[in-house]
Image (tube, rainbow, N blue to C red; front, side, top):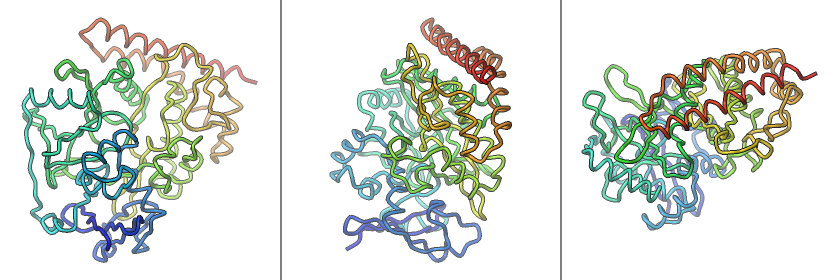
Length: 430
């Protein structure tokens, strides 16, 4: 007998996810397929077909869960299901995922359909918020407690939770039912020094250089430094908070999140360029944005820019756009030299950052069907603009602790040196 989860968007049934004999399947609702404003669950599952089987469905569903084996193991213990069964895990955490779809158990789905689905927010006082952040520091799988109504799942390997921020009163709360979360909170667990400063700086630096990047800030919650990111897949439209659908490149290309890195069988930059050209509503603009993000990660030594860190926003009537940048972080402050530093995707046939020069970018341009002159213009333009952008971005950030200011100085100095060296390497190559 099949187990069922209903896929729901804004009070409407999108389709049905089923699990039987260790295989997943998804079938769109006929009413959804017939709506001109409908959008697909995944670009790998277009609405022209009603049903899709395990080979396509499983990578998408697995991609909604954390790509952290330890978190999945702990969730499996907590919910008494196999940590390798994405359906049964999603049955417990699928009410709030990346993108617009909520996955609700079949027996509860009727409450969620129509104009009055269950909604609400359990507000947290300062002490409760601090307590939850401290729990997350101790165990990155406890982003929600068992008694919480608002269960959620976020992909990725870092410790994080998602909450609702009251836009008027500044209170944090746990949404439940159809109420979305608005922000992602990522506490520094001490694994990487000042990672919250690093990621916040890199996001704001990218924006300063003209890239679209998720909004962010840092603050202390209790004694813990926390990076707070505004969810770009949530928006207020006419005063109403709505979900916006998205998926990452692994999901769109039906690749398991376990294979997010290219050297582990994950998507290459070439495949993502092809994905953009096939599906984007503005392919020329979005391929330029993707190219700029590849260049940016090359210049800052952003070594974690794998396929799950590139996403596409999906709306009705065939509207698809490259999502803003997220999870941007530089490895430069954590390494003494670049000899062993590898990018997540090949550029011109190589992962090793120190090796990648003009010849590699020329080869990459050919592989990506881009004009080499255009590619070099963008590299030189961004590298040339980097020093001023680094200084301006750094000047905007104020930290009370001397150690934080010193760490920010270390980060900005390393990126400045890297950009100057990269520019020289490109310009002087024969």
